[in-house]
Amino acid sequence: MNSTVYSLVGLAAGVAFILALKGLSHPKTARRGNLIGAFGATVATLSVFLYVTPSGDGSESHSLPIHNLGWILGAIAVGLIIGVPAARKVEMTQMPQLVALFNGVGGGAAALVAIVEYLNLGDNATTAEVIFTVFTVVVGCVSFSGSIITFMKLQELMTTRPVVFPGGRFVIAATLVAVLGVSVWVVTALGTTPLLVLAVISLLFGILFVLPVGGADVPIVISLLNAFTGLTVAASGYVLSSTLLIIAGTLVGASGTILTRLMAEAMGRSLFGTLFGAFTAKPQAATGTTEERPVRSGSPDDVAILLNYARRVVIVPGFGLAVAQAQHTVRELADLMLSKGIDVAYGIHPVAGRMPGHMNVLLAEANVPYDQLAEMDEVNPTFGQTDVAIVIGANDVVNPAAQTSPGCPIYGMPILEVSNAANIIFLKRSMRPGFAGIENELLYDPKTMLLFGDAKASLTKVVSALKAL
Amino acid sequence: MDAIAVISIFTLSVFVGFEVVSKVSSTLHTPLMSGANAIHGVILVGAIIVADHSENNLELGLSLAAIVLATINMVGGFVVTDRMLEMFKPKKGDQK
Image (cartoon, rainbow over all chains, first blue to last red; front, side, top):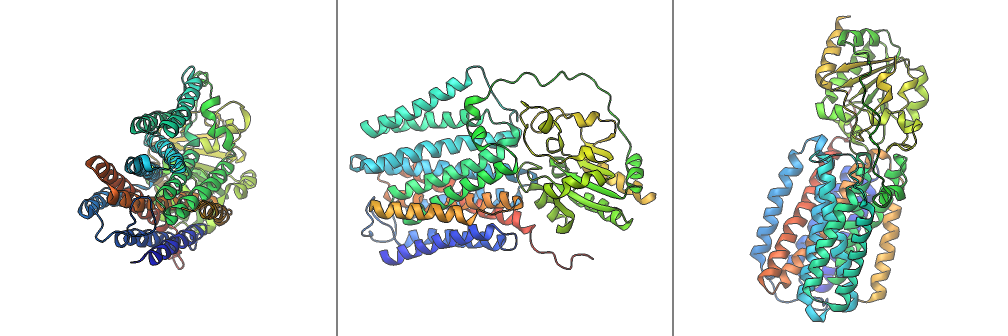
């Protein structure tokens, strides 16, 4: 393959990625878009095996096959053996953290590529190349360690609350200064040791950057780190003289930035506040005293009776539904109510679950018709005419504290105003607060009835009780 | 690489990236993020290039690690995105 053909293949892959992102922006074309992207990436990868440029210089290729071919193929095989089964077998509930993990390893890969190319170029590196290398190493390492922390938060391997320690912001600021200082050191002094020091403190900065982020903001951070990784790929594209990497990386960086902003808007969060939370977060006072307060808990029969005489019911699904895999059971309940002439809608909060769109994906799996899914803006005005709101494993997205108590971590997030419904039923596993770790006043509301237990088991009982009526 | 060419490619790509995702419903935020995540897995191309350049065991070892990670990112990313989107497929005539 000559260099012109190779460049044109790279261009074609770049176009494929644009079409992929475009396709992924619309429900009808999303799946095709993803396949186009996969096709582009495959073609781009295959083309490298047929044409390889010598280090740093794009003018001519060395003779085929490429060096270390066996090792390279072996490493790809290892990647496939790890990546494909992980992606195939993951539960719907765990997809968000898998995406975080994939993003992290991508950032790690970009950092490693930059380090190897730096070692390889040695004294021949131009200042521009060193600067781009430094950028890739810093941002790639931040993306790697930051993504690992988001993974651990989502997997609940560590606390989901913001981790803030006294003087934390000074530690973070000092780390950032160190990152910048060592970056300058690498650019001026050159050498392997400064670069490795830079990698280590960048990893540390990534951890410190993500630790203070509260549970509800984790998806925004994943999206941001995703955009970061894109930019590192673009920067390594410059060092490796690969137009394809520049295009692909920049596309992801730009679209990822927009997507991060869209997500922050959907959640009513200030992007700035999320990003610089690390610098402004204060240790929180313990959220209220957890005194024993009376709650009204009911039986599945009580719930069934309430539903049987309702004219309009809104189902509000949350992460608990995903955990219990109760999407099919909830559809069964909805169908049963519809057959009794009850008006049923699903109130979908944009960030219910652990990721934007989580609930839509889950309910689509259970073949819930699109027209029953109502977005937040649509459903909120209707709660006044709603007899029963059933909240299944959701908490933060209906917590009135978001509207009433400034200073709580979710303050300002738009919520589903279930408190306007005549009756509220909470299906919960326990009185444990939601992902953001905030007490929900609604649980103590006199018109609230709680049904404790696994969402799927509870719903199954409600369905059979309702059938019997 | 020619600096002007690089700057041109970069700038145009930024605008294309902004443009293609400017209007997306929140339903698709997660799959779109996941798809974009898979796309930056093309760093695999870079990892293969540096593996080819490697002149000693350290460089080869690091670049092979990069290949493993990049492959996981790229292939895993596209597979998991496809699984998410599988559930969006049109379900006409499903009302039986």
